[in-house]
Every structure is written in C-alpha cells, then in structure tokens.
Image 1: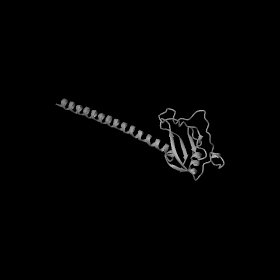
Image 2: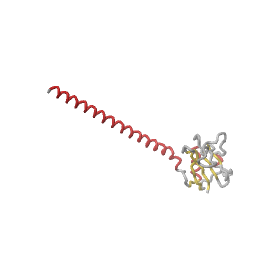
Image 3: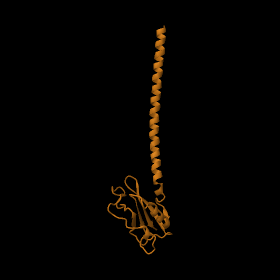
Length: 161
C-alpha cells in the first residue's frame, strides 16, 4: 500500500507541475499579445504627436504673420516645403524644398520633393512690401497640408483669400 500511495503522490505532483507550466505558458502568451497591442498604440500616439506641429495648419485660415512664423519654424526642415500664394504672386513661391503637387493624390510622385529644383522664395522677400512674395501680416491665408503616399507630411500650402 505504501508504494501505491507514493505513486499517487508522485502522479499528483507531476499533474500539478504540468498545470503550473500550462498556466505560465498561457499567461506569457497573453502578456505577449498585450505587449504587441501596447506597442502599436504607442506607435500611433508617437505618430500623432510628431504631426501635431503641422495639423494646426490643416484646412484652417491663418493670418499672414502666422504664415511667416511657419516659414521661420520649418525653414531648416529637410524634405519639407512651404508654398505661399499671394495676391501679387498667384503662381506662388516655394520655400525650403519644392514639393510635387501636380496630378492626383494617388500619383506616386505626389507629395515628393522635386529633385534639382530650388525653392523660388526667400524669407527676406516675404517681409519686403515692394516684392511680389510679400506676405501681408494681417492678410488671411487658407492652409492645406501636402502628404506623400506614405502619409508623411511633406509640405504646407498657404493661399491668400
């Protein structure tokens, strides 16, 4: 009888060990999936935060002084351009980089930097009343964001009303 009892205790011990290992594996798998979900959420939040500097200008009306401030703020940003269309310059001038805005949004080149094309405007002319690129500080401009096919913001277009 002693051997049977020892065998039952050993079987119960093995059963408990297997149950504990199973519970640990299940908890590990569910924690792994929760971690993946948290990483995805964190990545989305990071993307939103990185684009907040630009979303202020998304389909809004801003003053000319805000346009000049945006020029100063984003002047040294790589792969980014600002186009300003004024009453004097209906064709508009690009500052920073020139961005492809020709064609449909589903065009693969839409929103990409036009290589080999220099920006046509400079900040000093935007502040000089005698120049065609003059931005009236009290003027009203409709702002629009330009994104590429990867949904990365590549530029802002300001058009005077």
